Image: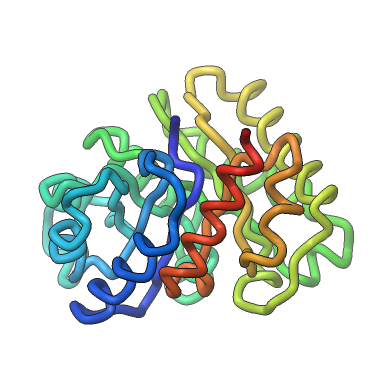
Length: 250
C-alpha cells in the first residue's frame, strides 16, 4: 500500500516532542501495519525521529527539497541528502511554500525531477484560494497547477497528489466531502489522461482534517487518504484518525 496518511509537522518539534508524540501515538493506534503512514518532521529532526520510531515501519519524509542537487545554495537540503537519512518521500509545492517563498510551477517541476532521480516519492500539493473557490475557478486553477508542474517532469515512477484548499488549511473549515470527492476525481482524470507515463499512486485531501471529520472524508470513493497538519501534532489525535481510516477500509 502506498502512503495514505501523512503528518506534516511544519515548523514544530523538538527531541522531547518526538518522544512524547511516539508514546501517545503507539498507545492509541489499534493497527499493526504502519506502511501507509508517513511523518514529515522539520528536516533537523529527521534522523532523531527515525531513531525514536525505529521498531516500526512508519515512513519518514521531508517537508521540502531543493530544486538542485548541489551548489552554492545556503540553507537548502537536497533530495539525495534526505535519501541519505532514510527518507522515502518529500512534500513538494505546499501552498505555504508557494506563497511565502514564491515557488512557481517551474520550480516545483524541477523538485519533482530531483525526487524521481533519487527514488523519493513526491507528494505534490495543489489548492485554490478562497477567492478562486468563490469564483467557481477551483477546477481551472488546479488543472493549471497540475499541468504546470508535470508537463516538463518527464516520467515519474511514483507520484502522490495532495489537494489542499488554501482557505481550509489551519482554518477549521473543510469543504463538503462530496465536493472534495469530485475534485479528486477530476485530478485523477487529468493526470491519467494527460500524463500516462506518470505513476499516480493516490490523491490525498488536506485542510483542517481531524478526528471528527475524518470518517466523512474517508467514506468518499476518490479520497485515498489525508495530508494532516495541525491535528498530526497530537500523537493521540493522529492515531485516532489512522484508526478511523483503517476501519473505513475494512
